[in-house]
Amino acid sequence: MNLLKIRPGEAALYNGRLVIIKRVELTTTMAWCDYVDTGERVLVSFGHLNALHPYLPTIVTGSVPGAQDLAQISPEKLAKANWKKQMVLQAEVNANRTITPNERKQSVRQLAQAYGVHHSTLYRHIKTYNQYGREERYLVEKVRGGKGNKRTSPEVEKIIEQAIERIYLTREGNSKAAAYEEVRRLCHRNQIKAVPCYDTFRRRINSLADGTVVRRREGEKRYRARFHVSNGSVCDENDIPFPLHTAEIDSSPVDAILVDDYFRQPLGRPNLTLAIDVYSRMILGFHLSFDPVSADSVAQCIAHAVCPKERWLEQMGVEGQWPCWGIPERFRVDNGNEFRNGAYQAACNNYDIRIDWRDHVEDGAVIERLIGTSMRSIHQVPGTTQSNVQQKGDYNSQQEATLTLKAFERWFTWWVIKYNNQVHAGIGMPPLIKYLHAFHPPDGPPIRSLPDYITDTLSVRLDFAPYQERTIQRKGVVMEHIWYYDPLFKWLRHDHRDRKYVFRRLPGNVGSIWLRDPTTGEYVNINYANMNRPPMSIWELRAAQKRLKDRQIAPDEDAIFGAIEAMRTIVLEEQANRKTVRLTVTTNRILGLLYPSPLRNNPDPVPSLTTGPAKKVGETNLILPDSEVKPFGFLRV
Image 1 (cartoon, rainbow, N blue to C red):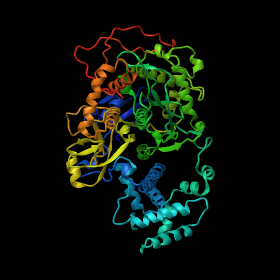
Image 2: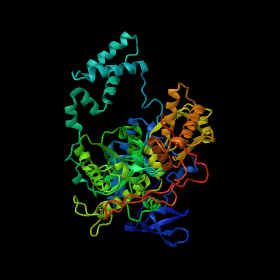
Image 3: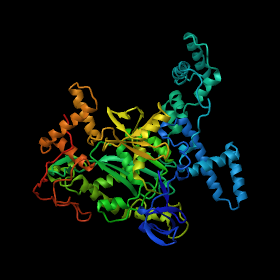
Image 4: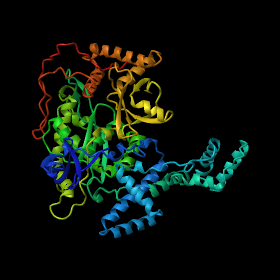
């Protein structure tokens, strides 16, 4: 991930040339910069600045040390790397409080002594952390010899796990010695002579998470009393000290029915994922889709929240200011499956984001109120379903629906800008004003520095996307019977033939997968091994697999693409009649897998934010393109 520090004195790239930031205009998201080679000063938008490559010092001399995906690092090593990172960050804080080099040197020695390490070790951690992108994965300890590896046999390890599970982790409260006696008994019964010593068994128990031990031995009530952070603690919404300290994320179906952009027929209710800054009540980002809420929808919402919005607003055709970006310190989320996957938690760990699980609705009151406020505004658009049947009355939502997904997304963007600029009853000022005053207060020092500017949205989305581990074969990599290949595989297979690599895939197009390059640490796009194959979405792939299974056909690459071609042919005959097909066609067009809408010269209507609901659009003539329409949708059978 490339981070750009928007502050005076920082270096950046503008039009391929090195510049130095001199002055920042936060209200207009502009900065005055000087070219290093000529000294000329120019006014540049944040969105046109690019960060320097974080791996630049090592591109010439060799690969980046430890440039591996977090999904392949054990939790124990990640915990140790996080401990090193906290030590380095504390050293930076102490250094800012000193004046002379001797004071700084003395503070480092005192901190090293407090952490129980030599001061040379601390200096080495500081150098590694700052040289290779300020990410904790570069602080992961390399395995040397047998250090950190279990030396007992797999049979003995299985016996130890059984003894801990059956004897120690029970409500009877059996002692460690009693569980160790079970280990000795099982080893004797299985004729294992290499019985582990008591210290080895004790270390296995001590490595267990404290919360797991308390929950299994003392019960759920004691566990919640000791480990659960309830509302009214440091996570209270009124005790958040600064913006981007805590952000809440949640999803909800939209209270409105949208139409497809081919025949303007109703499709259904999309799902909305929102992120809000608890301190300022500033809406950080959102994501709209007809797909069910998943890890990918959360990943897209997070990418939208932490990245700048200037270029996105230009693409949406919305004129307004949304100057928020940066990585929050905490995400407060519920216990949904989209937050429980390993990719989301590993990405949060990589970005140094703490996850606060909210077990009760009141723990996420800010995001719940925001969803309620947004839905009340959505009740003004045509095709609304209202909150319940009583409010809806005899209103025909299906018949009155006129907005497509793209038009509704544009309307909701306008609503977000309006919300950020209106006085919020909870804080007594507009969220945008409170957010900006934290960085540039009218009087007094700022309460926090400007967050780093993220320039690669795709990397953020891929970091939070689900992943699969695969080995590289002679033909490439196979995922769900589809082969992918890239010339990069040649030297990766030569160096590590049996190593498993982490591949990530975005559901919009399974025609390509992504791999983090071990040399540069950046993502590489891997395409089909057979470049003649057409692009398709993950939902088309699932439908093709189901079609083959129903017909008892063994799935392989040729059979899958044959089923895709057959289903796309059926769409020509059915897309005007079946809502499921229209939904798929609309989704695929948004993903870039279809031709543009044939409704030419008929822009989507956007309701006004001030004049109430928009009137229903009148009937329009359907103008089909001159050439044959080649759909890429599918028919669920």
